[in-house]
Length: 464
Image 1: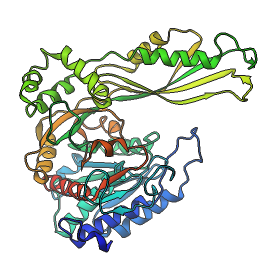
Image 2 (image 1 turned 90 degrees about the vertical axis):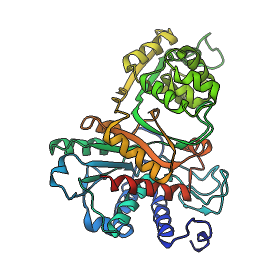
Image 3 (image 1 turned 180 degrees about the vertical axis):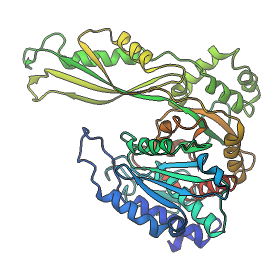
Image 4 (image 1 turned 90 degrees about the horizontal axis):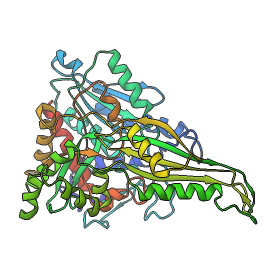
């Protein structure tokens, strides 16, 4: 770590130790795999090692906060506030410490080595490489680091602060659901919940060149579909006109040719108006009048990028294909898994109906697995929202902050059952390339961006 001293700004020992703690957590391979998915099942050892490491890494947190283990390995911390009436309306900071699988193939640095380089592909800032640096051990470490620093400074919040660390967000979120169940039984109704989600970005919104922060006030629903074709097999030497695999392929192509209907929901319209205030003059005129120019803006968003397309419609992605048992035999069963993200203003039922209409084949069975509707919309105003905005601007003066629809699914969706103020924001600067590395190879975070995130959490907690 000594060579980092010249890279960090300022190069404090405290910051170096913060980065070293994140490195240690990234090196623990807390990989979640679904029970029926490929590869070895999730084992308890890395999760136990992660839990055991936390008291050593963050001693003040574990001296002053209580810690409960809920479900298999989810963690709930409580930091009592000075006002006892605030116990039922706490601030909840959330993260998860499980990660998606990663092999070393294609990575510039091994995914669980937590290597630091003096610079990276996104500029000349030091970079920490590894699975979980952004999704989502970066947030977990930044939250704990911020509390450790505030405790060292003698700070105590006015109302209770809870820290929820999920252990299985990447597969089913049962840990977070169990925490919500416990809090509901205790009569807790959080005044503010903040989980992973948006970030400080640039270049993602047409016509706006400067950086801005996007905070999720809602998130898309998530639903898995299983498409299945079952029909007579036989020898591959005499195939029928449409075998099971070809019928399934045709269904997928039909789906691709008929995407879900695009629309501008209320949150996206507010985002357009907010960010549009800093757009180039010609576009600013249009963005301010989003309701009038909605058909034009829909066409722009559909053509700009995958991110803007996903903002305005339910998305479908074919993630798994299964068929056949031999190279020279026709498959008797062919399956495809479709991952759908359901746009606000629509429903799982509507999305499934669109799929069935597009496929238009009675021999393709559509099975709905684990449906989850879009989350309720939290207000982009009021005390909770303004606290997030102020914390961001304390660290990044003058930065635009806008609501948006989070396109991924997070553990925070379970907290909407007990709070009307649930937000999704990871307080880090992220380039388009860094965002593209989520669930992919070469996941990484810039060291200064992580340290800025720690400061944002500190600024937020000082208001609570």
